[in-house]
Amino acid sequence: MTRMIPGDWFPGAIPNNVVLGEGVHIETASSFSRFRSRRPTAATFGDHSSAYAGCMFDLGPDAELHVGSWTLLNGLWVIADAHVSIGSQGLISWNVVIMDTYRASRDAATRREQLKSFAYSRDPDVLRCHDSADAPRQVIIEDNVWISFDCCILPGVRIGAGSVIGARSVVDTDIPPNSLAAGNPARIIRTLGNER
Amino acid sequence: MTDSQVQAIWDSGTLPPNVNAGTGVRINGLHAFRRIRSTEPDALVIGSYSTLDGVQFSIAPGARVSIGNYCCFTAAVIMSECRISIGSYVLIGFNTVIADSDFHPLDPAKRIADAVACSPGNKNISRPAVAAEAVVIEDDVWIGPACVILKGVHIGRGAWIAPGSMVTRDVPAGGFAGGNPARILERPQ
Image (tube, rainbow over all chains, first blue to last red; front, side, top):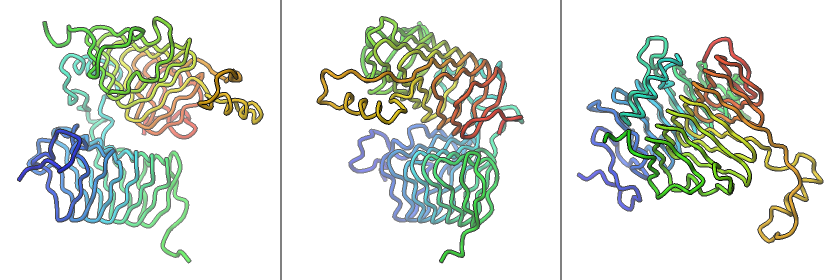
């Protein structure tokens, strides 16, 4: 089975270690142009999930990504070196960044060496955190979460089922289920579920 | 000759004459230089071994942008009306915007005049003065994705700017900053 998308402007294909469920819609294989994961199953897209143009799955060699069924990704950037999962019936807006790693070291001297190594090797995976303080921390977005445009979800965060994150928020702590959170840094505004 | 010893390469053509890029520079993106209107001979200077992946520049007449060695920028937007200088070993993440101007006046009456002057049919009316102040980003600075760095900001050596920050004030050397507006954090997020 070919993994080229009919009518795609991008000349690439969806990588073979990406598992697609029933009725999955991937608009363009360009979303995988930074996909470098070597895991046998590096990404899974649940039934009827979708990833539109503008999505970028920037996964390092050991990273994995899971997207639940009926989840809509409308221009999401995933920056992962470990594990990012997004539940079912999620709505993720444009220019949202979900990252499980800051990639380059926090230490300026180490970062210099990484940048030099990258400039000579052109290998993006030299820009990775190896020291434990900077190690990737998995990000879990539970079912039925709506993340509005331009948000950043930082390493180690879990967002509980049913929550909504307001536009341009930066989420650096866990958000409990059924919360409306917004701001930079994001704060919980109220609990959802008793709407009139 | 190894890959790193060759001259600067832009994947979409030959570099414009007022873009001066050093050895080993790699630039991707069809629209990288489309909005450079500066006619300064050194409108854009890029040091050696820097990587600009999907970066877009807007440089007004008379304005100049300089970037040091071993920088790595991904899909950043750099908009200059006067002067933006970025040091060496600087990392900038996806969708970050750096601007050294407000681009339009704050005063409502002046803004009406500016809107008219900016319209495509205008040939003779000159625009009112707009606030602009140089941006300086020193060596070893890390700037996360989705940040905005505004006019007059000076970010000191080795500072760390959290993803999504709106930076309106100076950040001292070695500082951690984050939030909207960005504040100095005691420790990184």
